[in-house]
Image (cartoon, rainbow, N blue to C red):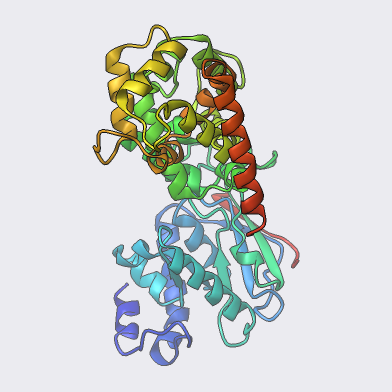
Amino acid sequence: ALLSSCALCCQRNSDDEPLGGCAKAVKGPVRILVRIILFSFGFHWVKVKGKIAKPEEAPLLVLAPHSSFMDIFLLSCIRLVSGVSRKENKSIPVIGSILAICDPIYVSRTNAESRKKTVELIKQRATHPGKWPQTMIFPEGTCTNRECLITFKGGPFIPGRSIQPVVIKYKNHLDTYSWVPSGPKAALDVPVTDHTYEDCQLMAAAADSNLPKNSGVVEYHKISEKLSLDIKAIKDLLHRFSEIDQNGDGLINEEEFAQFLNLPPCKEVSKLFNLYDQDDDGTIDFREYLIGLILVSKPASSENTLRIAFETFDKEGDGKISKESMKMIMVRSYPHISDENIDELYKLIDVDNQGYVTYENLKGFFDNNPEYAKIFAIRSDSILAKINAKKQAEIIAKIAVDDDDTKSQHPNAIINIGDTI
């Protein structure tokens, strides 16, 4: 570490040029010192299968599974290479100094701009292999317990250059190296899971919301791709889920669901609950909540549904809904609803505390609380049946005209080195 620090003291920190001068000269001695560190940690014999490619043949090395800092040191038995490392690692004593001498690419995993820049730097190094040392990448993006391979990130594959896969196996029966003690149960040579680093972030977010950690494991890669949700949106919805889950067991039952909606138990609530409860076990987990929210409630938030709901409550036809009008319709639709439920619901809609609700208020409420949209959609036939038939016709005709107007507008360890790909 002292040797690395001395060599770096006169170097200019730059992502555009590799280290030269003293820093380049001490890489050989640093590699020997790293091997001594490995020996002191009990790695007396490291077996290497295969032959590592030259930088010109494979500028990128892809290593998996990734479980600890030992993975980085082990490869130094063959060659001291560069790598992609999280930004926080540069401040770790000894390890940070060794990393710095290897021309690393530092990335902040929570910063989108940093991740984007990292991809550009990987592409830059992959296209100039003679200028830069080989770059080592752990495509899983996080540490696991080596009991499975989680979904690879796309970083090392984006440049479209040759890569060389490397597999690290620890042969000791007692696992004293992994930083992650538990995880999905699988062996290295069985199918890959669909979990990613983002699932780890969601597990931490679940714990912060006083939910069981496994509540946040939703197979982020699949969910985000199919439902077009990013990690921030899912974290926000996880927090919302925790507010519905009153006992914090990671599951929502029908009673909690009805209480969240400020509605009494009724067939409409049961029907909506069953749409969310995909496996019919009487509860909704976070994954089911996500899918239900996007595929069940969001489509029900259509312009037509909202406008019919608004016109239904707007008895005076003046573009305003009074609390009395809303109470009258709600009591007819849900006979067991309490005054407290209605008052609470009205407060949620009348966010400006005007004493009345406009169409924009109702639309904003549905946008922020899409669970209610399906309730209105399920109940729409019943609600429409309670108002004057002529008014129904006027409402539907007006919507049709407005729609037409809108349309017109628009050993101790084994390192397996694979063939270059």
